[in-house]
Amino acid sequence: MDLIGQLQKQYVDFVTSLYHEGFLDDQFLELQKLRDDSNPSFVAEVVSLFFDDSENLINNLAKAFHQHVVDYKLVDAHVHQFKGSSSSIGANKVKNACVDFKNSCDQKNIQGCLTCLQNVKREYYFVKSKLETLFRLEQQIMAAGGAVPMLA
Image (cartoon, rainbow, N blue to C red; front, side, top):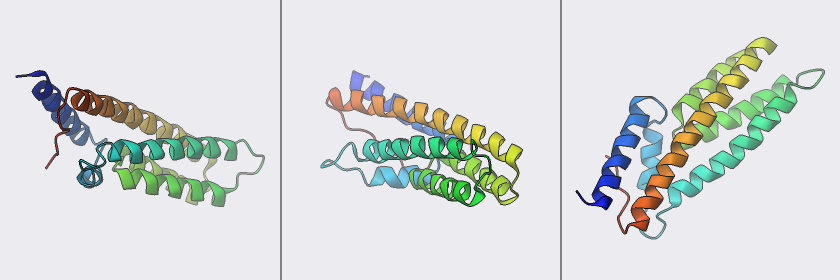
């Protein structure tokens, strides 16, 4: 097997493992279907925007819990936005952590919210690391003159 074939197999195996481990869901596949020859880095660009938004949301959430009185409506709005953006790229574990966070927020449970904030951050940094690895693989495939495989 040549280098491109090896990289493509590695790519498919890696994405498959991200699905089996629950990091990604079918929405990520839908996003990949929007990639084409005219914009081969479409998915990476969309996910990069997700990373930027997520970093801001995590910072805003952390600040919200450093106030004397926690504004649960504001926290809920940030969590809702985070859930939506993670859903839109198929970041399944982040989305699920946001659902738990929203429940703690609805109950105005400060301890539960702080635990959920840590869980959301952990799941976000896990998926960010995995997707950065995936995009490095994509770059290697394209640099070698190959096409990034489409997944069914």
